[in-house]
Image 1: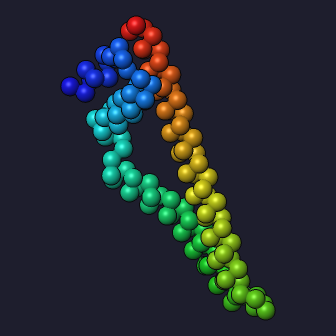
Image 2: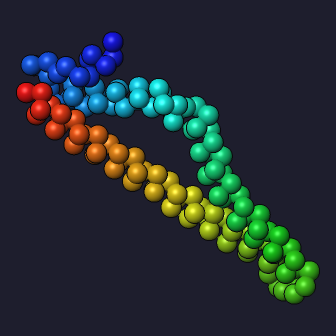
Image 3: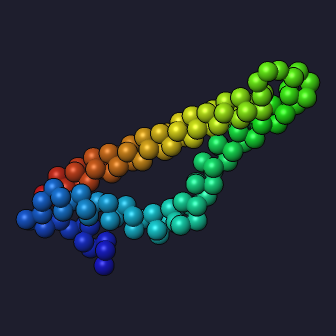
Amino acid sequence: MSDELTTKPADNETSFDRAVASKAARKLSAQREGTQSTWFGLGMSGLIGWSVAVPTLGGVLLGVWLDGKYPAKFSWTLALLFAGLFIGCLNAWHWVAQQDQEMHRQESNDDKGGSSQEKNDA
């Protein structure tokens, strides 16, 4: 039923209608393939969490070791905690930016494919 709606454009269809139909078809195909589900989203949020947690904990561990070996007026642990947190946040930001670019690239490819299909149908 949903395939019929996306393959047969109406004569009075607007660009908004085509955009909504394109996104709906993309979501339906993702559901059929099982590529993006709730578990997929939870896994991605876990991946982002680990990309922040690992450098932060690494900085803390290194800081504790440095505090024991080379005592200073400042806390190595605290300094490296913030350094690890900063690096982890940059890492997560970079990964999310990459995923966002990939998502927009797929959307633009779908939109280009949809407009050429509409030209062929007309």
